[in-house]
Length: 276
Image (tube, rainbow, N blue to C red; front, side, top):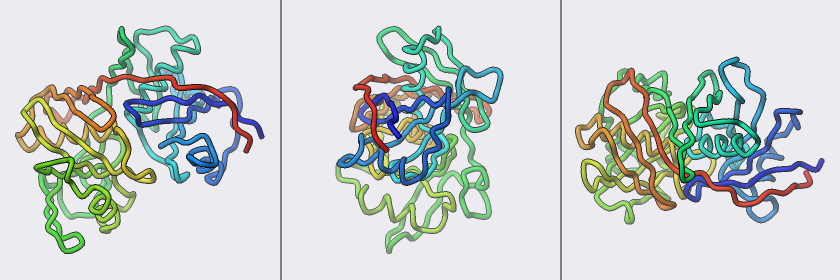
């Protein structure tokens, strides 16, 4: 099977976009992993599969598949890329509605290439994350691999644990990230963010993602970090989040019934086809 694709990225968090609106290619987990392989495939952090919308309000639906072929519920950098892909395919902005899972999100195409996204409301209840604890807390303290770890937990459509660190460059991302993922508290896995607060309106962030490892940027991770930082009284309603691949602007007024807004770029790299 020869499959066309478009390669895109959001701040270095890179994707292979497959437009399956006309026909489902029926890809297996092994084929998704082959596409994502950086030596034997195209190479990406996630594959984004564009499908016909089920909800009449939405222009299209998309699914996220991690580099190892496992499914993911949401991707903030990916949804911005999907918005620009749809614009390139003829969709008229500036507002686009895109279906992800059971929700429809509104995206705004901005001048200069940025996309502003309604990322939905944060969820703190343990079953919604999911997190295997008896009751929700602003901070959780657990012994993980012999060290005391303090973290906040939230769902931004996918599960996140956020750890504040004094120096993000020196944070043990490669060891503590998988340790938190494997600690048994997160039955669906978790994305682990390491956040350095520089000022109430500025943080630095690194994220160890499920099924992909550390990525250049994580949009839902940036939202989660700001939400947890706001919950801890550390951050303002508008925060610039600096990731390894660049900056995102995250806005949240602190009301759990109000959505989180994310603004950032989406970039085309190349297009082609792959034999599977």
